[in-house]
Image (cartoon, rainbow, N blue to C red; front, side, top):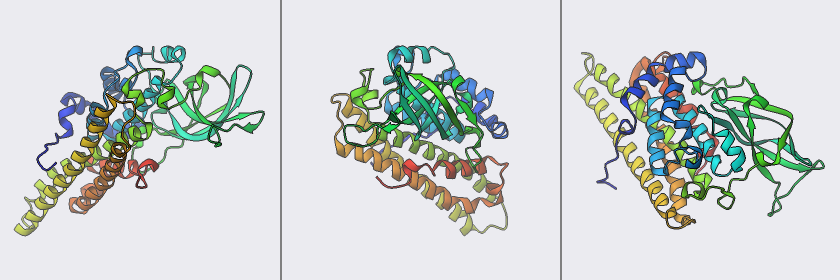
Length: 370
């Protein structure tokens, strides 16, 4: 691992796309949703289709390529990276959705799936499908979405249905955007442009084929991407969002420290201290990134030949994802006090990166060690 070189995220994204996304990031915060020019890049690059099956004109990207690209997009801008990650992640459901529904959903040029993984709705079994009611939070990219997905508790005759293990049955559904009410609810310190608002449905009649199940045995597209466990896929993709933002923060620190070094009031020892802190931060970040990418790459190599990835390899993906997210936040918090008031001003790029990181890292999936 010590001799492994891990490329900077800038190696995986077009420089002009970086310029467009960053130059409109402040305006996106003011709009409280992604800027049209940011969306134009996303549509042109087909980032919302990264995980959509190839049979539906999706990219069906490999997991190693996915996490490197997602880290690069989040390095470019936290909100853009987060929306791409969550909405392209929902596109992965195309491997499980009924083919008739999937073919219609993914026929749209600007297809974008947003939604929630929390089971805050109920689906009552009817003669033709289900009647759905519920209200869900944190649907990143909801305002740009063409379709919405949500988990529901299944009921029949008002009684909760149990699964084969005796637990309440919870299944995801896909709705057309027109059938969903978006509710303003996203008022947090960072990730402002993700527009992660709430949504609700009331007495919505849903056809049976709009319900699907996420499990390797339920995949309707036979490919390694849809056999890969959802938990580790989610952990890995969220972790690189946090590392990408952290690397952006460190890059901005370098500019600030360079200017600080020119101040005559700084001693030589203080200048050396700043250089050492940033150098150590970069080395530490790269160590965790190397471990993470090695774990992801190994798990992906394993599933090419066997539909069941060894438990120890999946556990390593989980642990390195958690460690990467945890230490990215710690590294940024060590550097933050050395940046002066520029890092505390909400109008600066470095402050936006700091706010985005500390908001993104609150995600429950990465809160507790696996």
